[in-house]
Length: 371
Image (cartoon, rainbow, N blue to C red; front, side):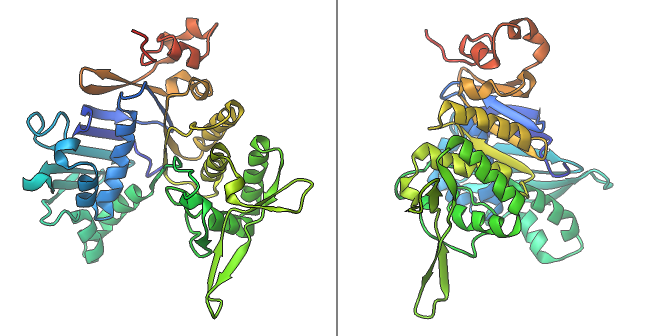
């Protein structure tokens, strides 16, 4: 996979003091107790997307300012440094605190393996908008080198389906036209499924089939279109559905939190055009044990088509993966440390125990401490 993330370096970001050239595979399952730093690893991708959207200042402000994002605060960490390698390309940058707890973007560079210079320094931004983006938009000679880098980063998709409240966007109405890609919080789950039903019938049927395993009473999604406006110009759709042996149209509020979250997860993992890298934080929340098992199978299958990064603390979900797909996250003092497991170190244990059981027992380090 050309644009999948091969190596990642993070220095000085939240609880990650130094993560050097960390290698990622097709499947990367981050496990660790609460507070070890799994979510901070996922937060890097959220921060990166904010940077690429031109909103890094807003991200910093909404996360408490640079003093709260720098590892152990500005007295201990002067700056944050990041470097990514993906295929024959790469990107690196530095974030530096400014007065009033703001942020400055510096030392941007892009990498091209077949170029004479390797790393090409872009420089320091004077307004926090990445010079990479400015070069892409300039349509100059160099933009042909920046565009693939920018496109690769934008192809990494984070899904966060934690908000399943009664007012969650995934339960509401959305315009039919918002159907190109599944949004981060699944706010457009209904128009996206409607598009799949029309254009990707096989994939849509598979999503319904998998959802029926968790929801045996589900017949199909209705996805009824509602027309708004005096001239009927606005069309919206919501996640309505029908049960077996009934014609009564069920509405999104009839779905439990775990059920609607599973529908979103199944759609994300079975969609016909998967992101180059797909990132999910604690997808097991609120799911029935059998749904977690099926989720593990979906993740394994999707990892054959794209790169998956998933953070979890569910022993049952961990059971669904090979030991060498697991990355253990622990705290060493104030610092998060990451270690990919080697199956050969656990072969004897795996004759009698599952990976999830070994994690709970702390044979696989990073389980819950009972001290």
